[in-house]
Amino acid sequence: MYKLFVYGTLRKHEKNHFLLEKNSCLAQQAWVYGELYDTGLGYPTMKGSDLEHKVYGELYEVKSEQFKDLDELEDFIPGDENNLYNRIELNIHTDSGIHKAFVYVSNRDDLLGKPIVHGDWKLNRLMERKPEKIYYFAYGSCMDMERFKAAKADQFFRTIRGVGLLKGYSMKYVFPGTDGGRADIVENGGETEGILYEIPYEGVEYLFQREGFYGGWYRPIFVDICLPDGKTITNALTFHVYNKKEEKAPPLHYATEILRGAKGRLSDRYFAQLEEQLKGLGLKI
Image 1: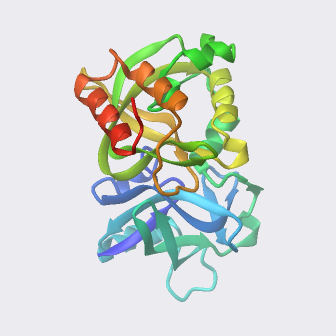
Image 2: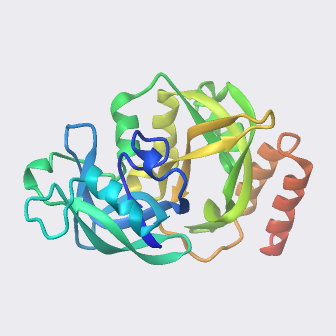
Image 3: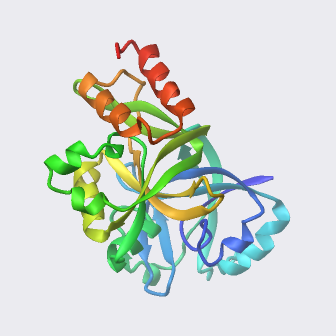
């Protein structure tokens, strides 16, 4: 078994993911140092980089025999100087640590088209297409309407699809604010409940500002959300902290927003879990 990092059409819900859909995904939120480019041909490419630029994608476990189809897709032949891509090993970063994995990187400079400055192929297409509506999963203070109203942005969040469940992630206060921690989802095999909104693209731009996307606080990501009726919403937008720190108790006003937004909406079991988590961090409710 080998590990493979993918950042383009092999990612979940992308057109070539069928080659990996039966494989074990070790991390949906993985990244590598590198620079990402839009080839203009319907797929991205990347090259290695220093410690400044990052490319985001997913980490899989694959069998050696699968590289026959993967190498064919990427136009890679071992030892051939005319490859479209080269397959090399790089350090891949995840919430669980660093892994050595294969990555397909560009072997031709003419494919290095428009830079994707934020390093995420899926995010780049969202920002270019600006769809009329998108699903958004809130697990922290954005479950509460009060700050939406104060920011005069509540009109973007009036359509609520219901309570959603994000599998594979736990909510922890690992974003370092000056007065305490802020909520984040950590990919550690847990479960996180939240509110699933259907919002216009104007709401997405508001969230980019609120979550500090342009300042490097939270990164927009895409996740699958399970609904109580058994349906799954794919590629829902949510946010993931760029640089996690040790978990710390949030300030009381922030904890109040989360509990107020969750009360009577999320399950009683999960609400009690939120309270116990805060108490365990030393916060008096």
